[in-house]
Image (cartoon, rainbow, N blue to C red; front, side, top):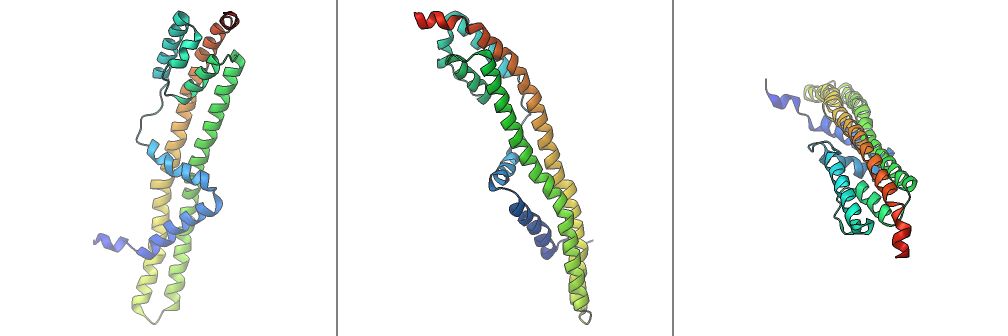
Length: 215
Protein backbone atom coordinates (compact mmCIF):
# COMPACT_ATOMS: atom_id res chain seq x y z
CA UNK A 1 0.00 0.00 0.00
CA UNK A 2 1.22 3.46 -0.91
CA UNK A 3 2.09 5.39 2.31
CA UNK A 4 1.09 8.63 0.60
CA UNK A 5 -2.51 7.43 0.84
CA UNK A 6 -2.36 8.22 4.56
CA UNK A 7 -1.20 11.79 4.03
CA UNK A 8 -3.75 14.54 3.57
CA UNK A 9 -2.60 18.16 4.04
CA UNK A 10 -6.12 19.43 4.68
CA UNK A 11 -6.69 16.93 7.50
CA UNK A 12 -3.29 17.75 9.02
CA UNK A 13 -4.04 21.47 8.99
CA UNK A 14 -7.44 20.94 10.59
CA UNK A 15 -6.18 18.69 13.40
CA UNK A 16 -2.78 20.21 14.20
CA UNK A 17 -3.75 23.77 13.35
CA UNK A 18 -7.01 23.51 15.25
CA UNK A 19 -5.32 22.02 18.30
CA UNK A 20 -2.66 24.75 18.26
CA UNK A 21 -5.26 27.48 17.85
CA UNK A 22 -7.30 26.13 20.76
CA UNK A 23 -4.18 26.05 22.94
CA UNK A 24 -3.34 29.65 22.04
CA UNK A 25 -6.86 30.87 22.75
CA UNK A 26 -7.23 29.26 26.17
CA UNK A 27 -3.67 29.31 27.53
CA UNK A 28 -1.61 32.29 28.71
CA UNK A 29 1.43 32.96 26.53
CA UNK A 30 3.70 32.37 29.53
CA UNK A 31 2.38 28.82 30.00
CA UNK A 32 2.63 28.14 26.27
CA UNK A 33 6.28 29.14 26.36
CA UNK A 34 6.86 26.89 29.37
CA UNK A 35 5.17 23.97 27.64
CA UNK A 36 7.38 24.41 24.59
CA UNK A 37 10.53 24.81 26.69
CA UNK A 38 9.63 21.70 28.69
CA UNK A 39 10.26 19.56 25.62
CA UNK A 40 13.99 20.12 26.16
CA UNK A 41 13.68 18.39 29.54
CA UNK A 42 12.37 15.10 28.14
CA UNK A 43 15.70 13.68 26.88
CA UNK A 44 17.56 14.65 30.06
CA UNK A 45 18.09 12.50 33.11
CA UNK A 46 15.71 13.15 35.95
CA UNK A 47 16.91 15.38 38.77
CA UNK A 48 18.86 13.56 41.48
CA UNK A 49 19.57 15.13 44.86
CA UNK A 50 22.82 13.25 45.47
CA UNK A 51 25.20 15.84 43.91
CA UNK A 52 23.46 18.69 45.73
CA UNK A 53 23.56 16.77 49.01
CA UNK A 54 27.28 16.21 48.53
CA UNK A 55 27.75 19.93 47.99
CA UNK A 56 25.74 20.72 51.14
CA UNK A 57 28.10 18.45 53.08
CA UNK A 58 31.09 20.23 51.56
CA UNK A 59 29.61 23.64 52.37
CA UNK A 60 29.00 22.52 55.94
CA UNK A 61 32.67 21.60 56.31
CA UNK A 62 33.71 24.97 54.84
CA UNK A 63 31.46 26.81 57.30
CA UNK A 64 32.85 24.83 60.23
CA UNK A 65 36.46 25.57 59.29
CA UNK A 66 36.30 29.10 57.92
CA UNK A 67 33.00 30.55 59.14
CA UNK A 68 29.67 31.05 57.45
CA UNK A 69 30.87 34.07 55.46
CA UNK A 70 33.19 31.78 53.51
CA UNK A 71 30.13 30.25 51.87
CA UNK A 72 29.60 33.51 50.00
CA UNK A 73 32.62 32.66 47.84
CA UNK A 74 31.37 29.19 46.94
CA UNK A 75 30.08 28.46 43.46
CA UNK A 76 26.60 26.92 43.71
CA UNK A 77 24.80 26.02 40.50
CA UNK A 78 21.56 24.56 41.85
CA UNK A 79 19.01 27.38 42.27
CA UNK A 80 17.45 26.08 45.50
CA UNK A 81 20.80 25.39 47.07
CA UNK A 82 22.07 28.83 46.03
CA UNK A 83 18.95 30.48 47.47
CA UNK A 84 19.38 28.73 50.81
CA UNK A 85 23.12 29.43 51.03
CA UNK A 86 22.60 33.12 50.29
CA UNK A 87 19.93 33.28 52.98
CA UNK A 88 22.18 31.53 55.51
CA UNK A 89 25.05 33.90 54.75
CA UNK A 90 22.69 36.85 55.18
CA UNK A 91 21.73 35.57 58.63
CA UNK A 92 18.40 33.86 57.96
CA UNK A 93 17.07 31.68 60.75
CA UNK A 94 16.24 27.99 60.10
CA UNK A 95 12.46 28.57 59.75
CA UNK A 96 13.14 31.28 57.15
CA UNK A 97 15.42 28.98 55.16
CA UNK A 98 12.80 26.25 55.22
CA UNK A 99 10.12 28.72 54.11
CA UNK A 100 12.24 29.91 51.17
CA UNK A 101 12.86 26.36 50.00
CA UNK A 102 9.18 25.46 50.35
CA UNK A 103 8.12 28.51 48.34
CA UNK A 104 10.68 27.77 45.64
CA UNK A 105 9.42 24.20 45.36
CA UNK A 106 5.79 25.34 45.26
CA UNK A 107 6.55 27.80 42.46
CA UNK A 108 8.42 25.10 40.54
CA UNK A 109 5.57 22.61 40.98
CA UNK A 110 3.10 25.18 39.64
CA UNK A 111 5.27 25.86 36.58
CA UNK A 112 5.68 22.17 35.86
CA UNK A 113 1.97 21.56 36.35
CA UNK A 114 1.06 24.39 33.97
CA UNK A 115 3.40 23.03 31.27
CA UNK A 116 2.05 19.49 31.58
CA UNK A 117 -1.54 20.73 31.51
CA UNK A 118 -0.95 22.43 28.15
CA UNK A 119 0.02 19.08 26.62
CA UNK A 120 -2.79 17.24 28.41
CA UNK A 121 -5.28 19.78 27.08
CA UNK A 122 -3.87 19.30 23.57
CA UNK A 123 -4.44 15.55 23.97
CA UNK A 124 -8.09 16.24 24.76
CA UNK A 125 -8.48 18.72 21.90
CA UNK A 126 -6.86 16.70 19.10
CA UNK A 127 -9.62 14.04 18.83
CA UNK A 128 -12.22 16.81 18.83
CA UNK A 129 -10.38 18.52 15.99
CA UNK A 130 -10.30 15.15 14.23
CA UNK A 131 -14.08 15.02 14.51
CA UNK A 132 -14.30 18.55 13.13
CA UNK A 133 -12.20 17.42 10.18
CA UNK A 134 -14.51 14.45 9.71
CA UNK A 135 -17.55 16.70 9.59
CA UNK A 136 -15.84 19.07 7.17
CA UNK A 137 -14.87 16.16 4.93
CA UNK A 138 -18.40 14.74 4.98
CA UNK A 139 -19.89 18.14 4.22
CA UNK A 140 -17.48 18.53 1.34
CA UNK A 141 -18.35 15.07 0.08
CA UNK A 142 -22.12 15.53 0.21
CA UNK A 143 -21.83 18.95 -1.42
CA UNK A 144 -20.12 17.40 -4.44
CA UNK A 145 -22.01 14.17 -5.04
CA UNK A 146 -21.86 14.71 -8.78
CA UNK A 147 -18.03 14.91 -8.77
CA UNK A 148 -16.28 11.61 -8.13
CA UNK A 149 -12.91 13.24 -7.45
CA UNK A 150 -14.43 15.62 -4.90
CA UNK A 151 -16.19 12.74 -3.16
CA UNK A 152 -12.89 10.91 -2.77
CA UNK A 153 -11.12 14.01 -1.47
CA UNK A 154 -13.88 14.67 1.04
CA UNK A 155 -13.86 11.08 2.25
CA UNK A 156 -10.06 11.21 2.67
CA UNK A 157 -10.32 14.30 4.85
CA UNK A 158 -13.13 12.74 6.88
CA UNK A 159 -11.29 9.50 7.63
CA UNK A 160 -7.74 10.79 7.97
CA UNK A 161 -8.70 13.68 10.26
CA UNK A 162 -10.11 11.20 12.76
CA UNK A 163 -6.96 9.10 12.44
CA UNK A 164 -4.65 12.08 12.91
CA UNK A 165 -6.58 13.26 15.96
CA UNK A 166 -6.36 9.86 17.64
CA UNK A 167 -2.68 9.40 16.83
CA UNK A 168 -1.69 12.91 17.91
CA UNK A 169 -3.54 12.57 21.21
CA UNK A 170 -2.34 9.08 22.17
CA UNK A 171 1.14 8.93 20.63
CA UNK A 172 2.30 12.53 21.06
CA UNK A 173 0.45 14.91 23.36
CA UNK A 174 -0.57 12.55 26.17
CA UNK A 175 2.82 10.80 26.41
CA UNK A 176 4.54 14.19 26.63
CA UNK A 177 2.17 15.29 29.41
CA UNK A 178 2.67 12.01 31.29
CA UNK A 179 6.46 12.21 31.08
CA UNK A 180 6.49 15.83 32.24
CA UNK A 181 4.29 14.98 35.22
CA UNK A 182 6.50 12.02 36.14
CA UNK A 183 9.67 14.12 35.88
CA UNK A 184 8.12 16.89 38.00
CA UNK A 185 6.99 14.38 40.63
CA UNK A 186 10.44 12.79 40.80
CA UNK A 187 12.17 16.18 41.07
CA UNK A 188 9.85 17.28 43.85
CA UNK A 189 10.63 14.13 45.84
CA UNK A 190 14.37 14.50 45.29
CA UNK A 191 14.44 18.19 46.19
CA UNK A 192 12.60 17.52 49.43
CA UNK A 193 15.78 15.72 50.55
CA UNK A 194 17.67 19.02 50.48
CA UNK A 195 15.51 20.80 53.03
CA UNK A 196 16.65 19.02 56.21
CA UNK A 197 20.44 19.37 55.68
CA UNK A 198 20.13 23.01 54.65
CA UNK A 199 17.96 23.81 57.66
CA UNK A 200 20.49 21.95 59.82
CA UNK A 201 23.28 24.10 58.32
CA UNK A 202 21.31 27.24 59.12
CA UNK A 203 20.71 26.02 62.68
CA UNK A 204 24.38 25.14 63.13
CA UNK A 205 25.54 28.56 62.01
CA UNK A 206 22.87 30.58 63.84
CA UNK A 207 24.65 30.69 67.24
CA UNK A 208 27.87 31.88 65.61
CA UNK A 209 26.44 34.98 63.98
CA UNK A 210 26.17 37.16 67.08
CA UNK A 211 29.83 36.43 67.89
CA UNK A 212 30.89 37.29 64.35
CA UNK A 213 28.94 40.55 64.39
CA UNK A 214 30.59 41.57 67.67
CA UNK A 215 33.99 40.79 66.23
